[in-house]
Image (cartoon, rainbow, N blue to C red; front, side, top):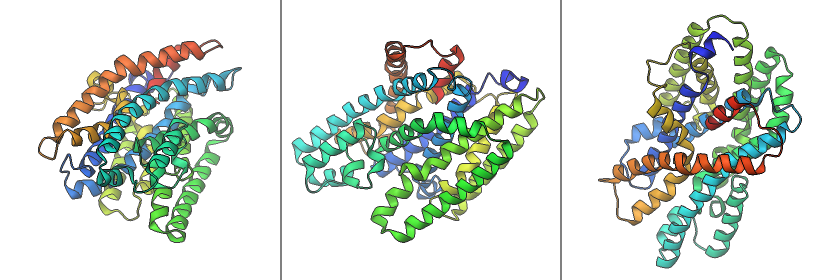
Length: 385
C-alpha cells in the first residue's frame, strides 16, 4: 500500500466521518419539514432540502465498495459473498426502522388522524390497501421504483434510497468487472457521457411529465441516480491507479478538496439548476478522492474517534430519524424543544450501531457465508459502505 493510504489510516476515517455530516444534513432538513426545528430558509435552500447529501451517499457507496471488493469479487464465490455482506449490512436496520414506523402507523390508524395520514403518508383513499402495498415494497426494497406518493411515502419514506442502493448492489459485480477493465481515459469519457445523459434524462422528465410525477422520478428514481454510484466506482479505480505510483499525493489531495469544496459551495449558493445534486455529484467524487489522497488527517477533525463512530452510525441515523421524528411530534415536541429529540435520535443511532447493527451483521454473515470469508480488511472497510 502506498504511503498515502497508510499514513491516512486507510480510507475509513475521513470518509466515514463525512457520512455523519451528510446524514445530519438529512436529519436537519426533515426535522425542519416536520415542524421540530426552525432551520433558516436560506440554509434549507443551500442544502437543497437534503437531496445532495443522499447523492453523496451514493458516490461514497460506489467508492467504498470498489475499494473493498475490487480484488475479491472476481474470485470464485466472490459475488455471492458480496451479496451476503450487503444483505447483512442493510437489512436488519431496515426491519428495525419499519418496526418504529409501525408504531407511528398504528397511532395514525387508531386515532383516525386524517390530516397527518395525508401529510406524512400521502394517504386519503384506500388507506389499508396502500399501506399493505407500501409495506411489501419496503420489505422487498422496491419502493423507489413506484412513482406514487401513496406507495413510497408511507411507513419509512427515507428508505427509498436503500431501494436505490439495492439496485446498485445488484449491478455492482457486472459494473466493476466492466469498468475495471477500461483504461482511465475511457473512464473519464464514460463518466462525462453518463453525466450528460443524466442531465438530459432529468430535463426530459421535467418537461414531459407533470410536477406530481417528475418530482419523484428526478429526486428518487434509481435510474436517475445510477451515474452517482458509477462515478464513485470510477473514483476508486483512479485512486488504485494513483497509489501504485508510490509517491506522495498529499498536495494533489489538498488541491482536489479545495476545488471540490469551492465548487460545491458556489453551486449551492447560486443554484444554477434544480436539482442541485446534478451539478454537485461529480465534485463529491473529487472531494472523496482528495480525502483519501491525504497523508495527514484533515486538521485532526475527520479522524477523531467520536466522529468516526457517528459516521459508522450514520446508516442507522438515516433510517430511524423520520419515524422517531413522527413519534416526537405525537409526544408533543415542537420547534422549541425539537433539538432534544434530534440529539436523542443521534445518540440512539450510535447505540443501535454498536449493540444491534454490527452484531446482527456479523451473525447474518456467519450464518449465510458458505465460502471462505473475505480478507479481514474487507470486514473493516465494509462498515463504511
